[in-house]
Image (cartoon, rainbow over the protein chains, first blue to last red):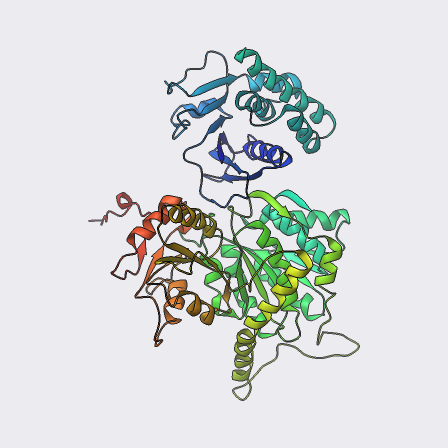
Length: 182
Length: 395
């Protein structure tokens, strides 16, 4: 079983991110359970979305407290929230942010990938919605999902210009992390 | 076909395949996505139905009552305060023996206002004459709607059914669902043919005054139907399994590792998935624990619960609702199943958890098993925050 916790603000597309990851896992024959948790029910309020995935249908219905992976859609949440809370010893964090982002000290085997997802999104989609770049980065950083599969999922979810831009964003997010790993 | 779907969308899809002639609903979190999707399906022509926009839940329930009285299949959905606003009509629907199906996206009750999940809303309408069945996952939530129409419209039944699914956890949860194909739906659920209907060509009156000479029999009749329906649920689930290849036993309860268990938790809805995880984990360590999941809360399956638990020494009932000033609603019913019987658990303890969306984790379930000791406890709330309970009085 793998658990992903997404940190975002309401309106930033975290549910879409969880859904896209869920669809991608589903296509690869796994059983994902993607679900949100809203705090205050208004735009801009901190919220979480989660993906729990296994080789059998997921029965556990609680939120995720000890994730294998965290995806931080809005780096301003690092102030005042411990987005890394409970992250596994060898956990991976993907953060939407700039290169000079200040990070807390993490455990030796934990890894962090800071991805300029908003820049990638602005360039390709015209709006600072970094979700698709982040799932590309997630696939590269974790090896959990295949890039081709992510692109298929994004193709289904979006149409027209948004489709084209989001496919590019997925690819660039993926490449950004791949380059960093080499 | 297996699909990855949001619970609400899966419900809208299955309702579409049931082809109700009238849909009326008022949006309320966490039910909203279901009726939004249905409104879109009607607007696009994908679903040929009359979607009646209304100004309140009381009107939504009234519209489906009227629609059903004219002899067509109808649908509505609500949550929490919305269900309470419907209450007057909810009782009327059962009293008029109208086979209406409603989804209750379970949510806590105000005040304080809270949009998150517990089961206080549907539980509070337990005496209304509606069937209440609780889904553990979205596959069941989907399947139960088909079963609900089939049961409601059975000539021997003619009563409304409330399908209860935990708000957010299921309604907003996306998971793999094997969606029933339309030809199979048609096979399992034939077109609705009413016994009586409002028809200007052949006028009748419905929902009239019943004076003391007549009223009591109407209630006795519903009580009898509920009692007999326990058998119908068994037959319908067998037929459902044959058409759709599922494995429902009787839609009353599910026994999970109960047979030789020393401690069993009784619960309803999605939390049972979490309990199963704990049961498996504990069984792997040699601990004899189990789960008895109640699927049908109305009618309440006293006999099945008695049979399942009569040799279990310790039972914990985990309620996601309360009856303030009395024992918790499910606990009191489970206890009553053993009253005056020779066999039965030595201890039936009552726990309340998950109110207003307080997350029930595996640790919560461990805690329930830990507190289930030789001494019976009641009114025991799990996961309380003591720091919030300090009493403060003004000068």
